[in-house]
Image 1 (cartoon, rainbow, N blue to C red):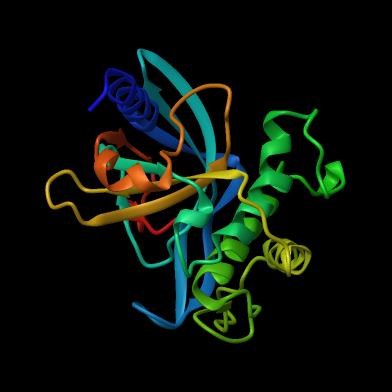
Image 2 (cartoon, rainbow, N blue to C red):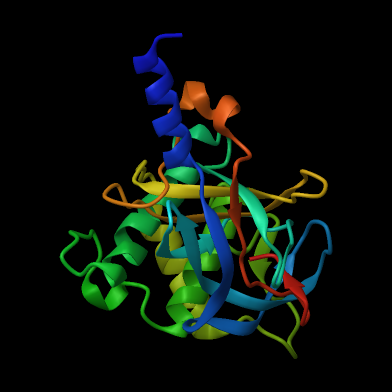
Length: 247
């Protein structure tokens, strides 16, 4: 191996590795106790302890980087206070999950809240600023990923059928809005954090957030993913029924 190639591999390894401390949910852009029908692992009306923006602190190269993210997986848990491994990848490196559509939402509705100079397909009033907007875009992402964006009257993610615990009307309206606006849209301008347990190597919650090409850990080029994967750490503060959540 030439010294130039070795140097390139070292650089790519450095860029793709991250360490993160525990993150926090953002209650200003998400809601606790959101109800919806989950026809899958649990079935029936389900109470999500929190649905909305998760802010993570990613430490890499002796620096901390602060990122807003939304959860991708519906049926995968992540525990409060634990540190997880992660591979930072681009949306198109995750097949069969509709993450390019998710990326379009992240790029147009979430990134502008961090950088108001970013051009967006949405009016500013439609950016993710409120609790209902945060919870709504999270429900939309779950529906896109597990149901292909078929709406909330069919599939694995539906509006709650429990009359005593309905889906918050504002959340439901925003979920439909983000779902409708993203139909047919695609972007690769997001970072996807594939987290996993250090102990077992089993997958944990996958997160999607805006891309930051100017600093912080970067997705490794696809051919190098296998060689460079598993070297980074991330912790996300989520909880389900008081201790953990599928975000």
